[in-house]
Length: 485
Image (tube, rainbow, N blue to C red; front, side, top):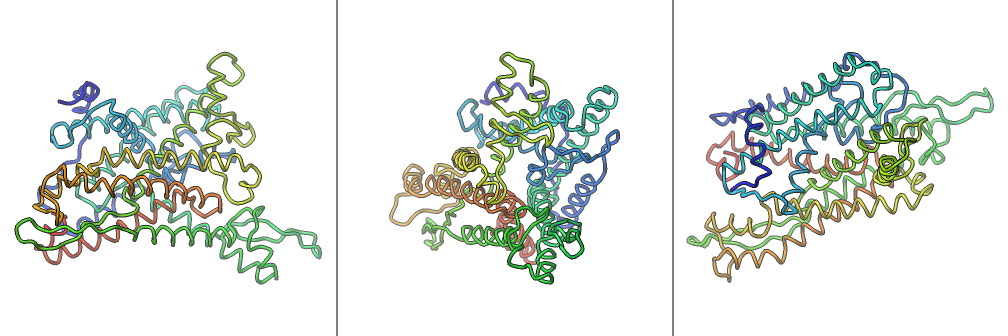
């Protein structure tokens, strides 16, 4: 039976929208078209401004989170994928900590779990919209105008529901892969491309002959070419005071991509065979067993700490009492830059580049520890809740009439054998991506460490999906073997 917590959402689930799965498997071209449509609509939302607010020159408190949340300030996609990921994170934590129990083998209970996650996503959309406005992200003028404030909140909630629908369209089989992954990869890829080739102006370097500053471009490659022309290539290879990106940060990005691709290829292959026909095969257990899921959940956790800290700082700063103490523990904010300067929000925001690491090494160390522990913890929880544990894999092998040579074909025996590999792969993989994400940020990689990790995994995942779908479309007989029916 479903837990009491899930039963609370039984009736609200009926009020939410649902995209039906296609009755007949769409063709490859149809899936490609729907994926493209979902992406284009999301990109349009990233460019359509919210009615009632004009983006000025004031600092954006959530600038460091925009890439991961695939959001854009002052647009319909202000909240990005934050509410969807946060709702999933909450349920994962509740299930992983055994606060609620879910039998994922029961179709009715699994559907209730999915519906509950959707209801939570709607509630998180409303909460984050109110928190953004009330926290001062749109300025005091919006807060003091209740009509305008309500209009903006309504727009953000409707836009959040549309993003949820776009994600569901892609995931339900109309498109390819996941809408969330698609939006993240697009946002990070654009940031990296812009970081390398941006033609926006940046000023750096004094010319003693003319008494003026050299005018450089923000793109790392364009900036480096200009530096070569002015004989300052070595001086400007690493230029932390520069307003754009230098070649050091771009090469750090390439290095992280290479490390992730190599780590993705690391695996252990367990010998298996069919119980009747004795056909030998291999069951791969990747080093990055849980892929990029932990860093998505960690990013959602950090984003919500950041959001709540910003909200409480604006409400309780200087009021005294318990709530001000809690607000200071979550983070104190600089009114000029609108960025945290202490507290939990400060230590869960990565220092970008060697210069920021050297300026506050304790912050870098604490961020590294928090990131690594949280990523490892989420990896272990995800294995248990996503049907990837030794117990679940053993049932899958038994259900497919497979066995491990030399071992009796019994779920408990196979589970005990898999326990020698799967828990360690989840633990080490989660720890590795936490360390790598932190290291990439410390090097100043373009697109952020988490963003690069996610994008690399997503691109590789889409390459595999496209290959399988194309083969299945050309030869339908392969579709069942490839698992894409």
